[in-house]
Structure formats: C-alpha cells, structure tokens
Amino acid sequence: MKNLKLAWRNIWRNKRRTIITVMSVFFAVVLSVLMGSMQEGIYGSMIDNVVKTYTGHIQIQHVDYNDNQSINNVFEQRSGLLEEIESIDGVEVAVPRLKSFSLISNGNKTKGGALIGINPAKEEQLTELSQWVVKGDFLTQDDQGVLITKNIANHLEIGLGDTIILMSQGYHGTNAAGLYPVRGILAFPTQEMNNMGVYLHIDAAREFFYANNKLTEIALLVNDYENVPSVKEALIQKFDDQYNYLTWQELSPELVNFINSDKASAVIMLGILYLVIGFGILGTVLMMMAERRREMGVMVAVGMQKRRLSTIIWMETMLIAFIGVVAGFLFSWPLITYLSANPIPITGEYGAAYEQFGLEPVLFFKVVPQVFINQVLTVLAVTLVISLYPYYYIGRLKTIDAIRGN
Image (cartoon, rainbow, N blue to C red; front, side, top):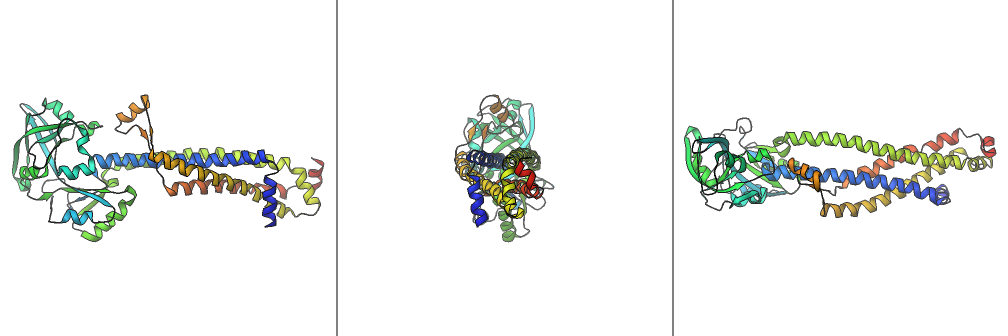
C-alpha cells in the first residue's frame, strides 16, 4: 500500500504528462470500441437485410429438400405446428411457404422464376413484403392474384390487372397450370430479388401444385441473430430428426464469407491502432524515465532497492492506464448506446454506392458487452507489456552516472 500511495502521488507531480498519457489511453479505448460496435451493428444490419428479405434466421425443411429442391420433397403442416414452433423461447414468428420453379408467360413471352406461396399476414411479420410493392396492392386473405417482381414484369411487358399463365410440375408428377391476375409489382433493392418470380397466397399455391396442406419450408424470425444456435438446438430437441434445420449461415454462405473476410481486415486495422497507441504510451514512459533519471539515482543512493523503485514506477504506469481505460469505458458506453438508437445516415455518393449493393445507407452501431470487454482488456494488456520497461531500465541504472546527469 505504501508503494501504491507513492505511485499515486508521483503521477500527479507532473500533471501535464499524466493527462497526456491518460488521454492517449482514453482515445484508444473509445476508438477501438467505436470500431468494434460499428462492425457489429453493420453485420447485424446486413444479416437483417438477408434474413428479412427472404431467408429468415432459420428454415425448417423436409430432410431431403436442401439437396433436391423438388415439389415432392415437402412436409405436412399438421394442426398446431406453427404454434408449437412459436412457443420456443426466442422465436418471434414462424412463416409457412410452398415454393417451386414455374414458367411465367404472357402472350408469346415466357420467363422462368420461383413461384412462392405465402401466408400474407405471417410473411409481413418477417419480410415486410408490402413495403416493396411499388404498384398495385399487397395480397389479401383468400386472394387469387399474384405479386410479380419488377424485372419479370418488364420482360413479359405486363402491368396491373393483366393475366399471366403459370406452368409447372405439381406434386407427385401432376401437371400444374393456371391463370392469375397481377395484383401488384415488387421492386426489391437487389437485381437478384427483382428476378425472383411471383408470390401468391399459399392456399392458391397448394391448389396450383395439388399439394394440399403441404409446405416446402417454414422460415423463422428470431429475436436476435446471436440466439440462433440456441433456437436451433431447441427445435432439434422438440422435433428430433423429423425435419432439416438450416440457419441463415447455411442459407447465405456468401454473406458469412464476406463477414469473415471483413473481420480479418478489421483485426489488421485494430492492430495498427493498438500499435500507434502502444508507441504513444511507450514514448511517454521513455520520456518519464529520462526526466526522472537523476531522481531515481538519488533514491537508489539513499537506500531504496531497485526492485521497489521499479515496482513503484510500474504502478504509476498502470494507474495512468487504469484511469484512461475507466474514463474511456464510461464515455463510450453512453455514446454507443445513443448511436445504436440513432444510426448515422450516409448521404451523397457513398450512400448511393451502399444502395447499389442492396444495403441501407446508414452506419449502424450495436451495444455488445463483449466488444467493450475485449477492447478494455487489450488496451490494458498493451500497457502492461510497456510498463515492464522500468524494470529493465532501473536494473541497468548506474547510480553515480544518474546522479551526475550522465
């Protein structure tokens, strides 16, 4: 405790040097937390864009459907199935779908695409599909019309109220064909989605495919993508191997690869940041040791052990680091909390570039405790390594030369 008291008094003998060092540690914590929280926020936004555009956080499928996406690999929507799934902790909504390939025709023009049968009310809770209807109206209950994506509609040269012909293979090899009026036209933020095909009511899709009460998938919306593994485990425990359970990572491997590569580049950026901060703190420690060389020589000459002197200087460095880390944490937590509730919009050319890639032009932040913990511990670790230098310096200190100022 005596050493600690001495160290505390020493760091305030030169307030300017102490404040400069504290501020370098403070900004290291704040900048690294901002970077980490922004990463998590942007990843979360990208995942939400994929999840809420179509896939869901988890999809329940027939055990053979993922390998062979045939209308024959469907399963029964038994009574109470959706309610059982929604009763699992973390599941917000279970969305039933019946999907297969279809030819979409108008006059002498034909285009292939997906035919997706949906429950309009359930689908709206997951994908908010109605927001992408740029012409016409969203599907109603018992609707016999279709929603068609923009690029398909342009290719077929059709508009609202026109009738399209759908042709496909039905359940167990039956021929599926029908005439359907266009209720609305969908314009998604990506070209891939705009080439998708048509949406119709799930009852109409079942009638079209002769697949009474069948489903190809149930898409789940989970309250947080970090809870997906626990929800999947709960599904396996409840339904065993009746179905196949695919997470958003398995359904969108290209997004996972992008996030992993971006995390790798972020590690390099954080490494550079820590390197700069580390050299800044090291420079302050070197300056402190040089300024106090004569003082340390006198203290050793009057009987203080070099080990104790080294320990006191080590404590000084760690106290300065601790003050900077605590100040950085106390500042960054409310800042990130505010930014997570009020994302920063991106305007101009950068905003347009984001939209071209189907991303919302906004910088999102997310409050993730692990981000704060990791950055605080890393900065402390960097400081801890640097603070070992006084042991080396004082161990080689020559008392007479130090007192003479040599």
